[in-house]
Image 1 (cartoon, rainbow, N blue to C red):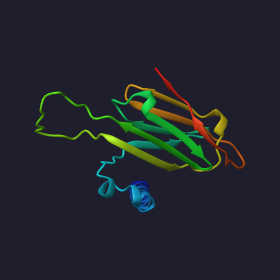
Image 2 (cartoon, helix red, strand yellow; image 1 turned 90 degrees about the horizontal axis):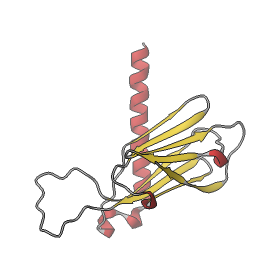
Image 3 (cartoon, rainbow, N blue to C red; image 1 turned 30 degrees about the horizontal axis):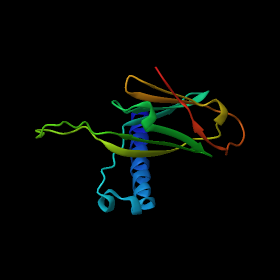
Length: 150
């Protein structure tokens, strides 16, 4: 019975991610890669919570600190960035190209009220990790989060 619940929750999360992506595309239609000829990618992202905090962990290897921006507005965390493509002076012919480059944006709806003044973000070993303390009550302020680098 527990395995069935876990499978159902996984399916619901997958559907939620797909719906988020769909709504992101509708909302940003005027900035669509088809219309602007720019590739947009979605870095792999884990979101989980403990009793005290919400944790977002995003895999974005090869990026530099100035290329990232994290903001929170109410119950939505926005992570934006752009990974520059590695170019070479010589003509390059790829046999296989799986690494994504270009701009990305992730909008993550946060479950419940948060302490926006104590959010910590750190970029280390190719991962951006954001720790968001939970609070009781209402959250709603908009602010940019500084990213620490190790």
